[in-house]
Image (cartoon, rainbow, N blue to C red; front, side):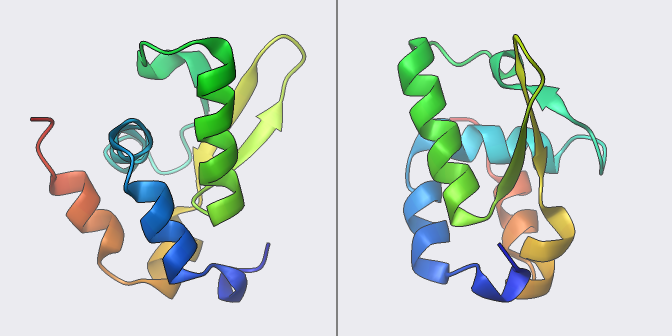
Length: 98
């Protein structure tokens, strides 16, 4: 997906879920190119629910996901999202975990 193809509605819909927003917030507050395993976010969800959430984030254009055999790695599309929606990631990064 090209940066110009990232749609605001899909991004906002993906971010409406607190679990997905937590993943994005953790990635925003991490190192720029930090690839993390999908299980490293501490989400108390079944494997199928976790897979669903990462699929939504990927299809919205917020993350890239790479299959690494027995695990998946996920990275934030920081530059693409920031270019398309300036300031959005800063808002998410500053959100409290209430």
